[in-house]
Length: 453
Ligand code: SF4
Image 1 (tube, protein in one colour):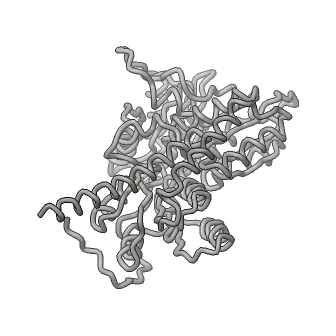
Image 2 (cartoon, protein in one colour):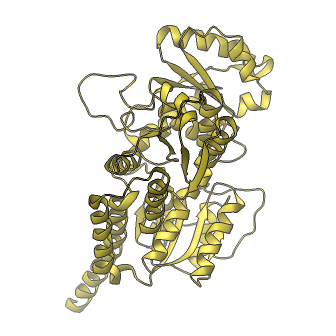
């Protein structure tokens, strides 16, 4: 394959080549889909909305519904107020959602549209809700957009009415529907009452029934998001996508926040389960302990596949931070750790883990895949973990590759298979082991051919 990436490091400040992120509204739209009977609404041009829907549809292989304010030149000059008010009227009349979740786009942000005022001037039917999040794509990434929409849910909906519900809130972060299902399964096995929001399970992983449902049965009910203000604590899983919502719940409703890593790998899953156990007083049941024991057994059985292997990890910050910790638990050597989402806390957190392990590595937030490619050209690694976009580096450098994170556009089924919890840890080990073994098998076959010749 053609490879235009030079080995010499090019220091760039004003140019991104092969971004390791996408735009804020993609994350906002994904979060909004995690509310039951919610129609995400893109306040901008049709092209933006089409791109965001297509991107999510390609990843999840399920139809993604969203409406748009359909900006034309007039809206660009005079503002999008009348477009939004007409949209709200039409969407409630024609598509009848319970919630419209408006997110902005680059154009509406540049114009400076005042969404709360436009919503206040709109006709919102009794019992229906409009929420919004500002998602300018010239800052942050789809993870920022996800976080902003979660923040919007809390700001508009959560309420403390002095009626404790005995539950915990779970903000799962930008993970697959299967991961949300897995977190819920563990909590149910522990007998813990919870409110998870957003929750895209049952929305983007629905069974084929032959009947089209515009609003599938999944997603968090509005009444539950309102009730999240009465919970005993909020667990924000992954600081980049969940911390802002958790802290807003504390500020607005006095629900204490606990920010943890996305529970990928043994250590992060242990910490999550012990934290919910300690706050709720519920024991971790034998079934879950058994799963943990299985992971430890698998780690012992397979350690020689990956122990001491150099790994490059790229993707979204919460996933990459947790994967780096897991790679260290497996005895691997993270050489390059990179995310496209800007945020110095990423560099600090990853560097501190690597320093503790005595590993020298390159770590960068707000980075692009061109940088990762240059690093790998200068000093190769044994395996690369990343999203679909990283596959071109793996192909060019002939490195074993594991697709993990968002987006994965060139493979199916991944969104139905969890990578969180102990079950997810087994899957991550399987993917890493198999990728490395496939390479060994290929090299062995090549040697056999050489011997024969
Ligand atoms: S114009 Fe902005 S919001 Fe629209 S698709 Fe492009 S980056 Fe995303």
